[in-house]
Length: 393
Image 1 (tube, helix red, strand yellow):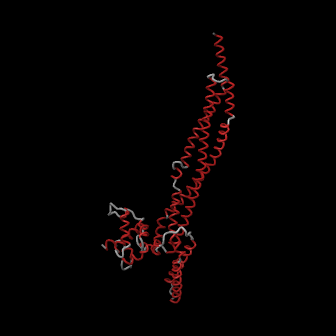
Image 2: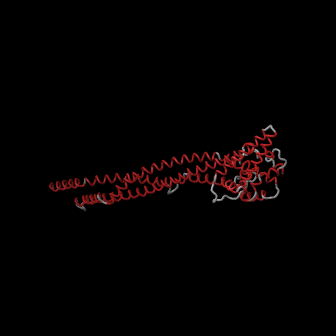
Image 3: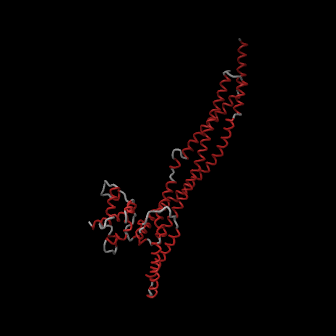
């Protein structure tokens, strides 16, 4: 059982004598059920091919039972193996072989800055969408009113024409109705709305162009960030394993990010790593002893800096805040928000449909006016026709 479970883990131990030492190096990840549950999220059914009826809740309970137990080293190693594989880390010591601690921390810091930038870009996009949405809603209401007024005017003119032609009203009354319609408040309102509609539509086009540009730029940055996510995960795991990032308290919304603290920490790591290299390379025993003394002081200072509450506050927050930025950006840039029913593009579609209706009504209105203008001529022709017929009789 031990041999089977440690098949992969043995490759991660290098010169370690026993798996207990390996498990102890990563124990900070598994100190309580809350941390375990967060870590367990990276696993899924594909990691348990021997369990066709795999159930996340049941497996999480089993994982907690194993990892929180006093012993059960083989099973603990098995879960650790799966998590490292999931992160595409072939060996535990590969982390140390590839990354210096200063490099991992600097990568985490840089990734946070990029995530913050993308979140800001997505927020700007969301605000632009809301602004354009307000404009489009105003446009839609204006267009509805234009269509409503034009429909009524067409109806009134058409009735006036039919009543005049049928002889129900006299020509003078017909002309008076036309003059009243032309000078009516509804007619003035329609002319005003049409002008405002043209001006506001031009504004909305610029706003939509801005939205498209913002979306393209922000989405490009987000995709770049997501492409870096795997490498970021490795650096985070490196830091988690070495300094128990997951074992810290939950994120506190009361503590704002102060990157200067972590940037200073990265410099301290870099200084200590540099001294370690100098110690290894130094041939002079006296100089080497001096460097070792400096290294010891540097390591102690680094240890003290790490244990300060201000430092731990920043360490515990940066990963969670980074994920929050990415989540915020992903949600804000979801184009379905713009295309949803009642959303901006849906309203623009309705607006264009009403614009087509307005064009048809506009043509009808013009035709009806022209038709009404011919009423005197039609009445005259009818009278001539009637008189001619009477004479013939």
